[in-house]
Image (cartoon, rainbow, N blue to C red; front, side, top):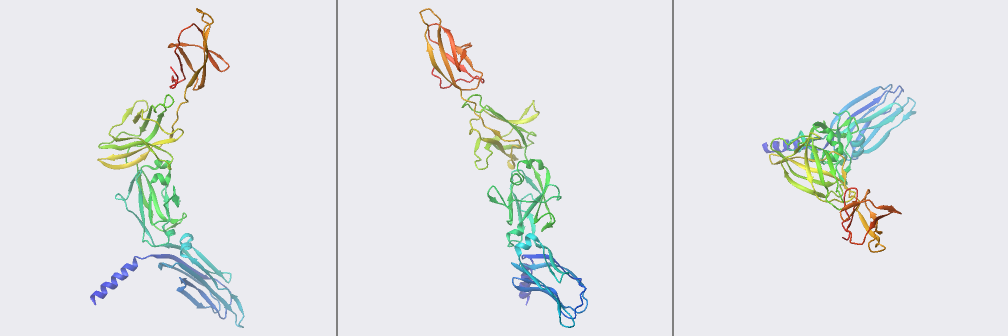
Length: 432
């Protein structure tokens, strides 16, 4: 007998943690019709069978109101609702025979939360506030805090409800406004799942930095006034210096390396803090290629012009022409990873200066020995003006005519001609 009691207790306890629903039931018959006979009331069906009902005889004047809460409604897949309403006079004439019914799926109830039936004009039967009995928690090791770049991992319990029961919302203004988390982000489904895995940057976008050191609330529910759970507060923190600005110094000449990329932070490293890695990444998430990755950054330099601390990629290399790039880095404290962040300023675009190219399109020797009426004709095929011309390393001013440049007054000897553009770049393919 003792074993039987233990088993029964276990079975009841387990059932108590199953999937159940909650709703309010309201029913009213404020009719002033005189009924000698008839019926009034309601029925609720769960998966085709009667779950609850209240049907009474309608005699003489009826005025009736009912309101009740149902806390542990079984997890039916469909619900059937019926309002019973007949009114028969003393002579046997029916002045109202208005039974009404509808079938509603659990999914529809979860999303809409309400269903109403009317009959005999003024009789009403309704279910409101329908919701799954769920709760949420944070699986993180620090359940009240989330570092930038980390994945938030919230769980909805118990499992086994339709996916729509796990409809996640968040609030950035202390529960004044609730925002539905998108069903999918970057092709990955994130909402209407028992486990919500997402970073704040994925959720909020580039403006996520505006919510550093603030609370973000999460819940399950729909709309502004249909919560399934109490709000769960997450403190969003950078957990590392914040890269507020990136200053990109492009290559000076065509096909040169980038001169430098300066990254300016809001503060210096704290004690025992550093970056395990910092790199440049394509801002297009479909590419996301990593460039110029450096490791174990233990110091930042105070820039006197901005009074900000900075890290510099010096002469780092080349990127893809026309693409946009940001800087990402992994914070670390005491050897443990903290915030994983991306520069908050707009991505910079990699540009490559126009190539300088010229040809000696024509030349003419002096007309006689000893004369200096020779010339060299130079054609610029590409480059950024103004151009500078050098004859044997001495700058000269050529004559411009019909888009061509003429270096005149030359006597008979060999000349070394050099052309530079606005950035003092040369034609790297010129034939010396």
